Length: 217
Image (cartoon, rainbow, N blue to C red; front, side, top):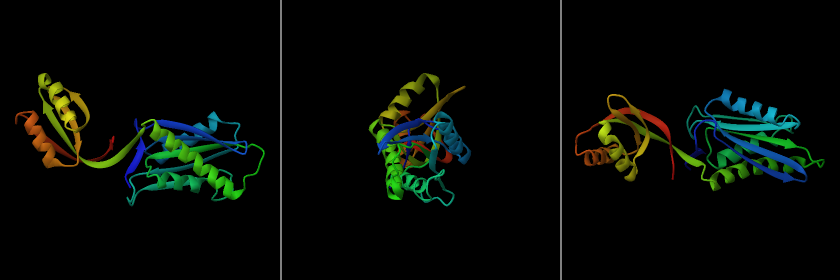
């Protein structure tokens, strides 16, 4: 399964709400990269909904299968295992990484029982994920090779457009003496051939190593 996250970089957010037996479950899904930022997102939800009793959370940081991936969850006063863990399983089951889910519950007066809570908290996260996907706000995370390509300013716009038309992922451009494109690709040989073609052999790639990047599908 591919690693997925929210489009738009750190801080991008999607909100969703479900109601179960008059209890409201408000989920905010926020893209983040650190544990401190994830906990800050929980604190922000707590401040925004200060009248609610529970602000349960789960987050996954880092690529799937990585030994240093961080996975945390918190029931915030709900019975143990009925909130944070099912939220974490919802994130992981959909392949989401580098995100924190915070579900705020406004009690509606009817006890849901352990099973009802598990379903509600899980559904709240899945509803937020579905909303993000329906809005086109989900991207894949892939580890790719990084390159720079230095170009004369007069040619940079045309060459960048031609590279994009051929499916080359350009992360950005820095302007100095030259226009320097930052490129991420998973096939160095193919990329080298494309660059040689669009520049007529007048420019060469410089390898920078690897990085995790967003890839739209």
